[in-house]
Length: 208
Ligand code: GRF
Image (cartoon, rainbow, N blue to C red; front, side, top):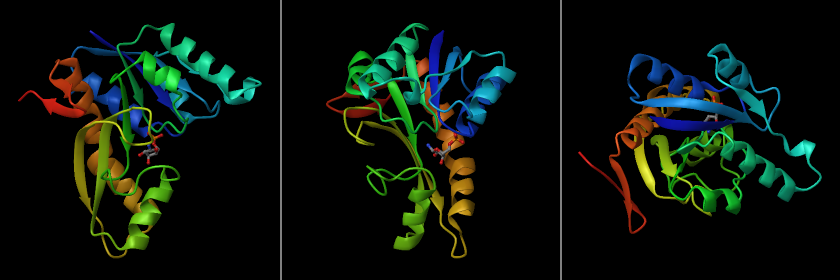
């Protein structure tokens, strides 16, 4: 059984996609042990609690220094002994102590086709605003392992989505979530649960 700790910050639609996929069997042999939010008002916590899953808030505001928050976040995760940490709409900068504790065992979903429209400052709607401002015709989403950089870890899965001429950032975000994020994040988790994902030389190989 693959045990997950899911980190969230907002609405939790990616968390919902994971819970639904576990429910309908798209994700096999996996359970969510805890959902952790840096934001006490994140609706994602409500989604967890409705599903009988521990939903806890570990907020930077409760700690005097960033280092103390980082240590509390890592301790909170470790207390549930997860096999995999999933960043699902998580806006917290993941500290090095956490990456070191979970090498190639932290997943992130980014709402663009890395290496495009990623890195510092590219998150949430800002990503889709940049895609539209550049006039890109294709965008999508990427699931990758988290390393010490920002959106720089080994890529696991990607899925492309068409940009329509009259798209607003909000409309494009919704299409990317529906057609890409909510598909490839559960799929990546299921592949890992089945032991089909290996990292060799910084690149991901998926066993067919
Ligand atoms: C989505 O755009 C997701 O790609 C990004 O955070 C936003 C909200 O995600 N990572 P969620 O609805 O909280 O899962």
